[in-house]
Length: 131
View (spheres, rainbow, N blue to C red):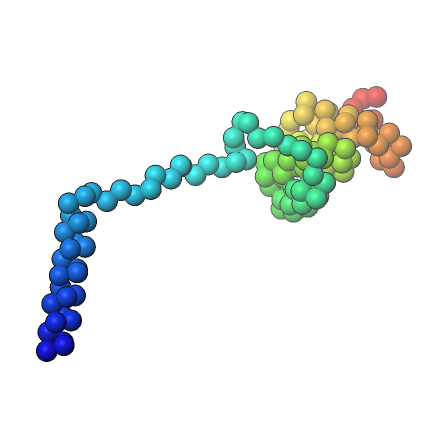
């Protein structure tokens, strides 16, 4: 008898739930579309030397694989997180030079020399810039 009562109660309970769902259409929460934050134009950069070093290492990884576009993108990120990081500017200039962007390479090398005027390779960089 208890089994019959339990089965009856379960049947009524399930029919009430299913009937309520059929009466009202299910409303799923609306989520905003996913966005790639690196592509958004309003991204703001604050001084973050740890993130800059991370981007520099990843950029160098891509440069060793001769993936100049990926390396350039990561090295630009490094210079945005820490504009005073001379190695990032030097490596960015080298990658831009290899990808045939002479103007960008000159700007990166000039910034490198501005930050490290007494660097060991300063004469070589000045020669590339025609100074």
